[in-house]
Amino acid sequence: MIQGLVAKAAATVVTGAVGVAAVEGVKRLAKEGTLRDAAVTVTEWGLKGVRKAEEGAESARLAVSDVVSEARERVGEEAPLPASEAHEHEH
Image: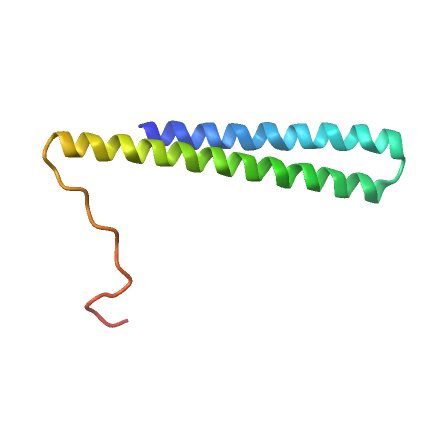
């Protein structure tokens, strides 16, 4: 449930960041008057927004993971080991 909310929040942040990037790009286009510069600016803002959204999503994911881990510890359940790359069967 919480992970679903985190995913929706991250998607909303990305959408907002892209929207801001587009608005800023249009503002610069109006001032500078060159289409290429505007396209580069919009792309730059979009990349920055996506990076910020990814950072926020990762922080939220880690916070949720900490909560789940603590809850498992309280009920006496051991956290599962991370999957190892070595496995017993052939492909």
